[in-house]
Length: 145
Image (cartoon, rainbow, N blue to C red; front, top):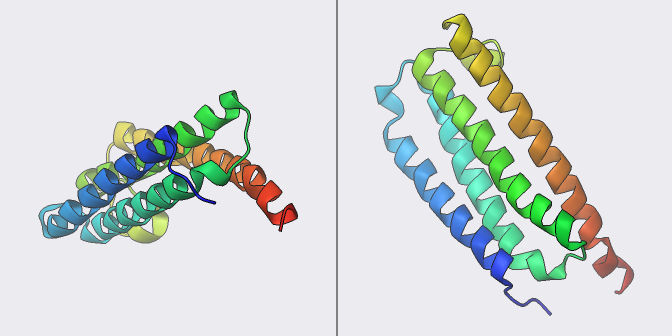
């Protein structure tokens, strides 16, 4: 049975706020340098916000040691936020090297390009590790069925 844990409630709250930020960003798409990148940022925030809320709902089903539990919860949230923030910075500055499809035709300073690259790559790695660990934490519910 699914029960709401404190960490689950925190993930739901973070997810809903992140979703709201994505909706607001959607309204601001025309105001940035690269609107295609801003659309990508908008979609990232909305999708990652929903993912975090879902993680919160199913959190009580995962079986992870406390240290991994904390890492997975906040690692996924921080990873998703870093990806979104990197994409959002790219939409404002025109950075394109780390996200070449949405950034095609744009360029930015070396500092902006490096900042976006570090944020997107770090966030991607962090969220990949956290989500993989969550999947392993959910395996026992498959075996108990």
